[in-house]
Amino acid sequence: MTSAIVEKVSAAGQWFHPAEANPDARVRLLMFPHAGSGAIIYRDWSDLLPDFVSGQAVTLPGRQERRDEAAYTEWDALVDGLYEAVLAELDERPFAFFGHCLGAQLAYQLSVRMADEHLPTPLLMGMSGWAPKGFYTPSEADLNMPEDEVVGWIKRLGSFPAEIYDNPEMLAMVLPALRADLSVSSQRVDHDSLVPCPMISYGGMSDPLREEPDAFESWVPRSPQYLGHREYPGGHFFIDRYAAAVTQDFCDNLYRLEEKARA
Image (cartoon, rainbow, N blue to C red; front, side, top):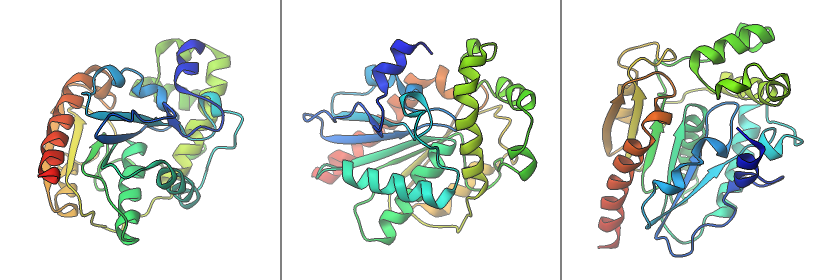
């Protein structure tokens, strides 16, 4: 994670990267990252998305070039702040959400809130590396893990590039954001909420955060058009290796839905 890469995808006070959506794209795609990270995890997606899709990734306060901003540590406050940012960003074009882990939790909650407030909802939702039932939820003990235990945990998950773990300066940037996000995730309460939009889920076959083998089936009753689950070899961060396959599958479905909506 070089400073040059970070500067390409981040700016102080900026929620979405790039800051401006492609005006020629027919569909907006907002992408939400996993705990402790930001837009940088989607840095390669701009080369993978088709021309009809304009992708913008989210960076929450407290990381990358927003690291001088206070990170959210409460679920409700984060959802409120992100909700306002998303509404201010969207235009008249259809849009989709894609989220991995904490990003999936946030994308799902935003969609629920949009539906509750009778606002347009995503054309398609991609839920990666998380399901509302049968997945790890941080405990009080997890939130208070000593630094060496946190580092060992994220090493096992493969959350960040290997060079970060032996770099005290980089760890000092990453760990506070990760702890803040774990605190946020621990406060999420599941209300079995429905979303009135199609949904696809993605997962790694050996994800250590999946506690129940049928966890992804918990999505089935929450969408009127659940388009199924796709599994890939690998753990929680299967998405790094299979980004091309995931984006192709997601965008193929998004294309069909957008064509149907325009018909």
